[in-house]
Image (cartoon, rainbow, N blue to C red):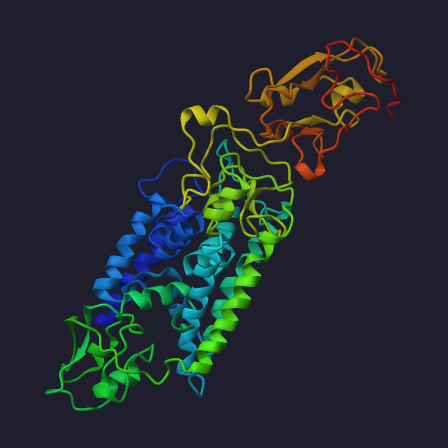
Length: 505
């Protein structure tokens, strides 16, 4: 078997493993490998989180393996492991362009790397949407969840596309991936070779001595087959057909093409001779200007006022701003579909960070599944003591004008049966001062104990009314009164205290 076929086989196996782990993370139950394994192996994810949080992130330990692999074998991650790179290689392409892209485009990956790490230094991880693992993870999770995701009782949350199972954000998450695929029209894996920030980081690491390509001058016939077949243009016609270790992805195509065996790989220091695409003084000024503009755009959301966004219970706005790398693993793992990526530019953490959606879905008490795949601990895995006191910061409210028990004297109380907190949602006799459309004895009505409610919204999921007549609204939608005039939110604070009567239609 040739090296090229072996590499393609390994690429497919890693891609299948990536898809299996990512989609498998949407199912309830634990797995022997974390669904965010590839994100944890991504050194750009770990390094950015460390810089933004000013602290060592324990999950970065796995990424050190990738750095060690790169130092020893060069950019083998790019050529053999990266799932996005494999997808870019196997997608069909139009006819090869007449003119190849300029080698100076290769400087782009260092510019994007500078923007990502520079923004991390000032505490903003917004540019992490450019990370290759993030680019392919988000759309895969969003689209797969509509078919394989399970809720807390094991039912599909997205089999019926007619009820909006595929959220609009799922299609928005496709835009970065489609953009990267569109670059293939210019050149195969144009993104990987010229713009990928992770590729820029690994290119810098690969400049150290290790297993690198070398040419045996005694057997080389200068046929230039290696230079023609090299997919990254790392092999130069001059300089004895030496290659730039920062551009070589260890695909070994040159070994297969060489008829005399002059191309070989062994431990050696990379040749650091000047390349025709290395930056000039003018290029450096342009790159610095572009980097400054990118950093200004990255920090813009932080300078604005915070939006009222409901975050997962075991994190905070500041924690997400420092640690969230926008990988999407958390809202892909949410068993109830409550988590969605924010598209707000006015919050401290910025867009593509996890938020609780406005639709009537609940946050399962003591679930914490969103924290399990997080590669940077942006969503903290709470201890047993911490889990007991988790609170979303909002309280359930009763819309008395829409509640069957409050407005129409109908027996219901499904919300009380669904409440997981003992005493947080009680039942009291309907005040005698309210009209009784159906007559008869007063029924039990739901009353929220705001001291015990944690805002999980399970009561809204159980409510048969649409829109739900009970639930925890987002902070921006909270109001002091939602029900019958004269009644406090959630019913009377003292059992049996009548409110102001009103006509019920």
